Length: 575
View 1 (cartoon, rainbow, N blue to C red):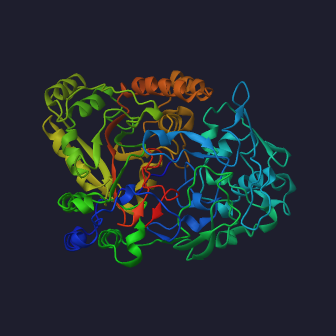
View 2 (cartoon, helix red, strand yellow; view 1 turned 120 degrees about the vertical axis):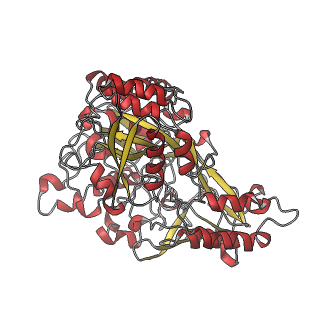
View 3 (tube, helix red, strand yellow; view 1 turned 135 degrees about the vertical axis):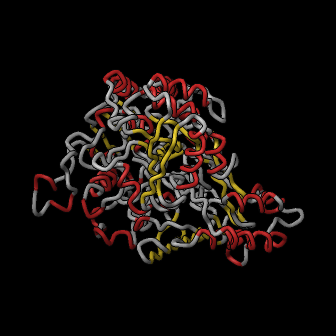
């Protein structure tokens, strides 16, 4: 399962346009100011302005990858992502551990050793038992919300219900035998299948240590015990407002990734996107040292920014491994016919779709399901080459072969909102493009609040709909397997294999790649598998989104990696 950075394009354009136009002259870098590239210094307060709250701020409930963003200021994990710009930031590096893990020959056992001198905010030592306990408590039903991999990967974990069941049921509450802690600095994981990507999973906040004696269950989020550079001094309304201050026992001697320049971090969430962009552009008071990690600029805002060099210098560009695509349910006619799916692929006008997504500054046309980043194994190919505007003649030819010489009428299901690129703007662009090939597309809007539940349930899944997928870490495994591994078809629950595709050769290749601990070798094979699957037109990739976000005029040391696509708050300094 995956969650993507927010990519909303509807952000009250008129209000923001006024703010950008009116505040531009006052909020650019001053003469002689080196701006975001200036030498960073410690001190001050960093303000983070976001739409989404921090999921109650319990490490068991956070859904983050690469050590997260705001959560990684408080929670350290066994491994983390390299805090470097661009593609270099897609690598896994040690965090609490001395290295990225030692695998057994078949990658079913992973061993980690902790660094010396690791301490919590109260000065007590971090132990391997604390990491084991932190993972175990993430299984508790009352602390749900994290990624699903633990239950699937850890041996004997399928029916585990967490440590809180101990009093009522010793069998399920005693702990996980698949996690061993032979001493205070060693932790060993036993998996039920080979997983070469385990070091990536070890970046999840569920690997953050939690001292059992200080676990307060569902109230732990009010004051989680910090292992990172900051500790929580205020948590209001389940993570809507967080105030963090320095953890005096955190040391750069054990953490070479987080810079932790500011003295204080003030996280304000639940804000309207128009308000966020207005505050960032105007930059009054504390907002001069503010950033956002989840609010994009839309097309109209970018147009305004482009006309002001000072504002344009304060836009960060990010790429996250995400693909928006057309999905087929191949159990529904006429989409059970490969020729029909191929005809739609040839008829598609990707230029119109990219324009509907905000233009080339916000969307890059896609012909591969894998994102266009080498870490995933991206291999350029187009199984149905029709150019940027489509090939209606080829599409008509395929429709004739499929038994539809006079054209075809189909229904495209989409969200009622444009917030997550599944909405009417994209759907209309698809509809217009297919019309030239004799394919009449009727649009079926589903209320935004229930859209994902509708398309991800076999019981309600339509035949043709808009979808998207993002990776929990930069590898082909969490990208291709949930969508195309036939063993991951879920008949009663959330199903992401919309084509209900089950090919033994594909399943076997997924297993074979998962055994590899050499990421470069695995990436090459993920790319080849992507190409093999793509030729069957089970999905039609539309575009890979690009993220454009403003930051305040007093922000320094901007780092945006291709792992998250957002500004890394652990690197930021304020003027």
